[in-house]
Length: 356
Image 1 (cartoon, rainbow, N blue to C red):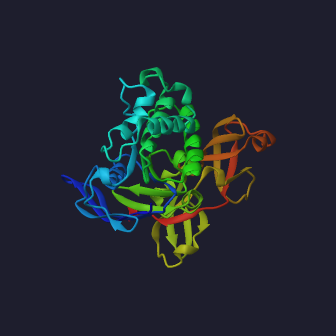
Image 2: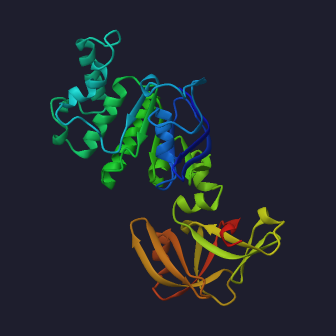
Image 3: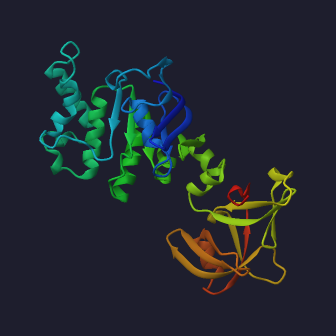
């Protein structure tokens, strides 16, 4: 099922939760709604489900305006962060619940229900737990049962609200890989809410970045990470170093170090800021006349394949975070306190709107 939302507005008192949001969710794809707490992503998910009603705008399901449809008529499966399983029911009965409460004319026979539930338990790789109760399961197992229960009624849309938010990091990583494999098998149009950028970039086909009730950027994971459309997106997706300075006719002067900024050829002595990720910095030992930013190595953390370096600019411009391979770190034999030269391989410049 393809989903479209058009010009959605939603307020809670004076708080604007959604401000004229329009989006397309392609049929069969897994889309992540990503952003900080309070940006409107869960409100949008609940509006799509029919659990919340917008002040203005439309929810269109497969080309039909479903704004006035009750949640039961939208054929939506919903998975919450905290499982919401019935503790007094077995795993089997939890999954069967949605089928057993269907109107009599639509309700499958117990034989069909049993076959379907066992098939779903096999799909989520927990068929051996059918007779257990939720309190006897781990958090990861409970979340997979919650997903099986949502799938039992054959939803045309699957909505997941921070589905792995209550789990520890190792289990989260395992479950998001499992969710991606499951989605590739089922191809149910799915939307999941998360504030975890690594989760969104790893799992989703499409990422929607939201901030303060508006959409900042939409695109494939690689597109939004490598080509951020705004300073917010750059800062939200991973670590970033900021170089503040004056922007004039396509050149950013950041404390005596200049960077080309061809996108801003028309700028006239404006405040600008350059964004560069830690792994996009070249690190060399300082030599007189070297081109780049002179900085002192304050701390190095070299465990595993990457070495993280904390550098303090000699010109008082603050700290710089750099990442290089552990092999290169070992070859350079860097010592804390040593003077280095930092040169960005790639730098994206924006007008510093906060400072205008």
